[in-house]
Image 1 (cartoon, rainbow over the protein chains, first blue to last red):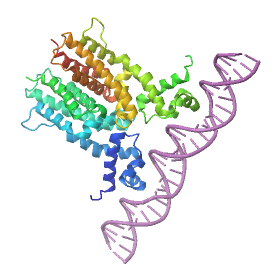
Image 2: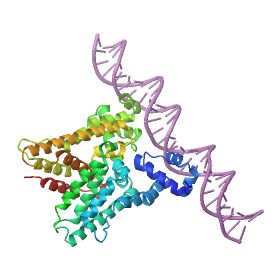
Image 3: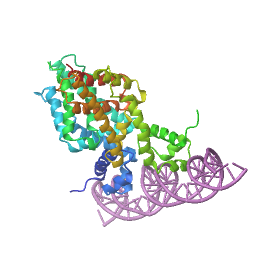
Amino acid sequence: MKKQPTREKLLDITFDEVYIHGYTATSVDTILKKAGIPKGSMYHHFKGKKELVLAMVQERLFVKMDTFFIFKREADETVMQRLRDTYAAMSKNKPLVTYGCPLYRLMVELSAVDREFDTLLGGRAKQLHQELTALLQSGIDDGEFTNKLDAESFARFILSATWGILSMPPSLSSSRLFLEQSRFILENLEAYTH
Amino acid sequence: MKKQPTREKLLDITFDEVYIHGYTATSVDTILKKAGIPKGSMYHHFKGKKELVLAMVQERLFVKMDTFFIFKREADETVMQRLRDTYAAMSKNKPLVTYGCPLYRLMVELSAVDREFDTLLGGRAKQLHQELTALLQSGIDDGEFTNKLDAESFARFILSATWGILSMPPSLSSSRLFLEQSRFILENLEAYTH
DNA sequence: CTATGATTAGACTAAATGGTCTAATGGCAG
DNA sequence: CTGCCATTAGACCATTTAGTCTAATCATAG
């Protein structure tokens, strides 16, 4: 395993730690120890803990999100197919199903309490909402869905419901249960197909 | 305002602080300062921070949950009516809509990381699931719903979706948006009515 | 009133936290 | 090879953390 540049390694370990333990419960020293990187080195690259985590969010967490929240259609795909696929892919993602969505978890911990995190994380949530709204709207425009479907509010529903399902405690979650529940969302949407 | 017994006052303040800031980010000293209670006094009543919060969960958080998750029907009520009512009542609960469900928030923070909290909080989640399953099942038995409805798994869906909707960041939540989204859950269930 | 146990009071402690600082090292342009 | 800047290294620091301890006070049973 080739030696990663300090900064990259720090971001990786920070993601792992913050994902499981949360922002507050993750100490700088723990990250440093796990990464095998001395303090000065970290404080050379980042102003402090908060800046490290903010960078991690943008360069790791957001990137990881793109691998399972995929709301862009292939040319020949229906919206229903896209969403079914998205859920199928998510259900195969062990850490996602076990520990929940990293974006949502961090929002729950920090949004009410820190403006910068709220802006960054909430901004991304809004962006996902826009993407999903656009997907649903395109389905309406194509005639896949009735125009009784309110794309914007159903998109909001899909997102928060999915986050809720994903972020149940490990002891109550499994790939099977995730799929079982996600099917209700799809079923609900299907009622709007022509 | 008559002076509350120390123990009760501590539980109240602890609920407020942990609800907003989470377990880890809440310090014993902060609670003590806000409550105007000296340390020795607290350590006389509780072995430590964890025990204080565990007691708070059982004596405050669980009790508060009972005021908005009400899955017991009145004699003349349909299941749909009961749920509609539950959502209507929740939407009027400002802190609930703004900061989310205190049980769910604490589960998200601690379940993956602390066995005792996982057992306590997860246990309550299971109980809620059972109550809701029983409610839906009674609706099937009464002929309100088709027997195509899988009470247990739909109950799970209702719970996690509701938690997801409730626990969106304050900047993305409002009473209006909560109701808008909860309506999709009800709509989905309604499809199973005769 | 008084003796006794429960409670209050808060100074104190050890460990952990995030953060600073200076000296050593490494890589590379000239 | 040399000089220079970026990086590494980790000892050190102030603050906060949860938790302890002993003395004072309070409530009340006798």
